Every structure is written in C-alpha cells, then in structure tokens.
Image (cartoon, rainbow, N blue to C red; front, side, top):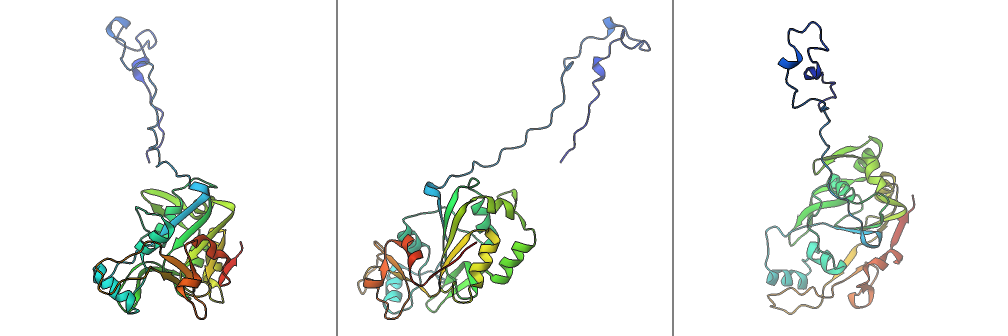
Length: 273
C-alpha cells in the first residue's frame, strides 16, 4: 500500500511571494493545477453482502462418480446396494440449487462471510461424514465414498486457537469475521453420517470454532429416492426423502421430505455454545 505523502505545490508561489525569484508575476502564468489537493485513491468496494431468506443458509457439497456413470448404471447401483447420495440428491431434498460448492474447509468458512453480519440464524451443511472426519469434497464409486478434502476435530480446534486468518475471493478475513455473520442464537446443522457419535468431539470443535450451537446425528443419514424400474435409463429423484438410521429402518415409514425437522429426531444431538 502506498502511504500518504504531503505534496508541495510549488506552482502556488508567484514572483511577488518569493522575493528571491528571478521571475515576475507576468512571467508565471497560473498553473492549471493551482489549488488542487492530492487525494488517496478510493478503496475498491467489496462484493455486496447477501441477506439469507428467513435467516437460513444451506451449503451443499459435491461428490461425483469416478469414473462417471450414466443414469442407467446409477439405477443399477441403487437396486444392488452400491449407491451413494451426492449433490443432485441434496438439491432434490432441499429444493435448493447452488452455483458453488466448497472445495475445502477454508472455502466453507469463506462462503459464510458472503452474508451480512448477524444475518444467519440457521446454517445447513449437507455432506458425507463419519465418526472422526467431516468431508468437504471427494468422489464415489460402487464400493465407497472417498474424501479429497476433509477436516477432523484436531484441525478444527487448531483453527479455533490459532487466530485464523485467510483469503477468500481476493479478500482477507479472520475467524471473527466468520463468527460475526451468525445471530446470537444461531445453529449449525451438519447433515452427515455419524458426526454426533459419542464422544461428540466433531460437534464440540465446530461449536468452539464458530461460537454457535451445533447439531449432528449419531447414526447414518439415509437417503430414500423413489422406487426405480429395473433397466430404466432415467434415475428418478422427484420426491426423494431423508431419514436417520435406526433399527429396522424403512424408507416408507422412517424418512421424510421435511428435512429441517430432523433436528428433533431421537438420534439428533445438539452441542450448545
């Protein structure tokens, strides 16, 4: 950054004001810059901050199939117990389509800073997780889901204690900037498998990092697409439902389209700030 400098405007001195000058007033025509003052360049305005509808922000992740598959193969995977949910399923269930998904945990924090201070009362984060790790991005095949970016309790705790600062979309932020986006009674809901398994170290670490109450589930989240037809070339997602695993779980009885209500499920755990 260029510092302020006081500029001497020598053109303001005429012959009569400077007795040592060899030039008279008639020899010094007025400067076109006379009386002008130097100014600091204007600071470029940052992007306009968003205001979430009803105070709710929903962030979805993406786990593409690797290698890519067509819808016919996806139907076959579902019917044979080899299927996993990803962005299209999160989008169908929430009714939300997003332009960006976070590429890593810092990007997730950056996405929060896109909103005005004290504007987020509920943040929903749809992803894959397990008892020790929250996935941020990755890929899937017929056997499993793999993380290429993830975060665990230790990393989250280190972010909370290190005076975190980061750059997102060419702007600099601190952890305080992220925390400031939440209302005093905000909740962060983690829609991912097993993240609230006892001990709830992942939820506690998130609570300490963001200074909000955090809700997760102590068993697997179950995605229930509609019935598919054997041999179909189209994977039907319309009306897909979600639930939390329990003994003798049945999609018809134990899943719902009211995904927000899952925070009241017996397997939901809240760690209060």
